[in-house]
Length: 362
Image (cartoon, rainbow, N blue to C red; front, top):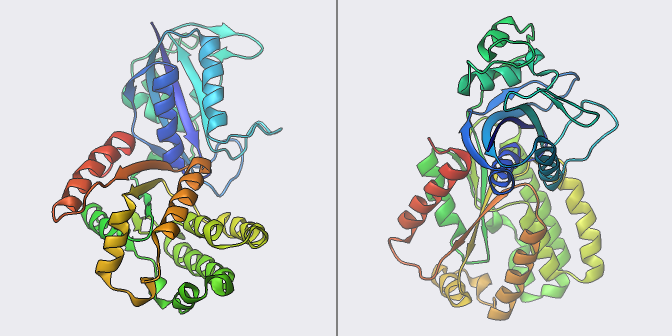
C-alpha cells in the first residue's frame, strides 16, 4: 500500500456536499482515508473571487500508482461538475490535488509530486500541519510545521464552523414539516416553513387544475425564491427548511402541459442560479395510503380532492428529479408506519448519518 496526502477544495455550489461526495468516492475508488483534517475556509489563491473556498486535507492508503490515482481523482472532480477552464486559477465545484505520494519525487508532463506550490499556500499547510506536522517534504527537506512557519502567504485561512443548509422533501402528507421543525430544534438551526397557506390560488387549482396550474406554479416559484433568498443571503447560521426550490420543478412537471413546462423550466433555472444549493436533502418516502391518511387527518378542505393517482404522479416526478439532481447529498428516509415515537427515531437515525457524512451536529 502507498500513502498519499490529498487536498480537497471548492468554492461553487454545495461546498460541504461536494467535499462529502469526494471523501466517499475516494474511499470507494482510491483507498481508505486514515486521517482527515478539519474543514478550513479561505480566500481564493492566485486570483480574485467573491466565493470563499472550503478545503480539507486527507491522508489515504492506496493500492494505486500515482498516475492511476491522479486519473481516478480527475474522474471524481468531473462527477462533481468541475469544468476545466483555460485559466490556471478559477472558481470550481471540486479540486483534488495530490500533495505527497509516499516520499517520492515524480516529475512528468502530467504529474508533479510533491505539489510544486504547496509550500506557498497557507490554506494547504494549515490543515496539513493539523494531521501530519512532522512529515518531511522530500525535495525541500523541511517538515510541514516548519514550512508553515516560513510561509509568506498572508491570505485569511480559518477553521470552518459548518452552518449547513438542509431541506426536508417528500410528497404531500409525508411529514416534512414535523421532521424539519424537530430537526431544527435539535440542531439549533433556523426553521423555514413554506408559506403555502397564504397562496390563494391553491384552492382554485384543486377545483380547476388545468385552468390554474401555470399561475399557481409560477406564484410558488416566486414565493419560494423570495423566502429562501432572504433567509440564505449572508447567513452564518444553520438553516432547516421543509421544502426546496427544486419542488417547483417537480410539481410543475406533474401539473403543466409539455409546452407550459418548457417555458416554466427556463424561468426556474433563471431563479435557481441565484440560490445556494442545499448541502443536504432528506427525502421522506412512504406508502401512498399513509399520505392519504395524513392528508385526511390534517383536515384542509382544499386538499380533499387529492387522489391516490395524483400522489403517484408526484412520486414519479420526485424520483425522476432526484436522479437528475447533482450537488446536494441526499438521504432517503423510508417510513413504513407513522406513530408517536417515529420523530424521535428518525432524529436519531439522521443525527448518526449526518455525523458520518458531515461531522455535524457537534
